[in-house]
Length: 210
Image (cartoon, rainbow, N blue to C red):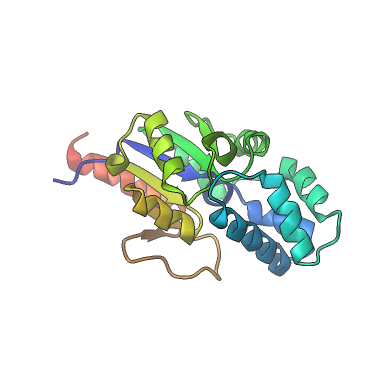
């Protein structure tokens, strides 16, 4: 029998927040903003443990030849970041939910405040001591949520993140935020909005008689 989800974890900066808008504004356009963000992601994936997120951002900007003020501009624009419109669907969840993010603790706090949502907690890579897709951060989030990995849904906004959660033993879904992202592994459920994911969870509760 397929047991219902007992808790939901969301990637904060892509699934919940439209972080691409601030990266693009700081970089000068969408193409450079995405390239910058991807360069930071590549650094995070390669790190065996947490390294200062802000340093990775600055290093990646230099690698791509962005202006020296680009990183400073990005961190200032962090205070203007907005949630995706469909994030409002999360308020309908009847199970506990929380956010997991690869940024630093201070930047995570800003993004959560800007989201307008009330997660049980936010777990940053700085606090976890490692970056996603390291299995430890997903499992620590499950522990804090009080929901075992096999009954916890992780909703990612990036393919590598959804696959990392799946490898860690969680149920994984990908909400599509980028038209240029590669196709996820077959085991990953793909949705085009958070509304779609929440509605699916509501259907699972009805089917289970909850």
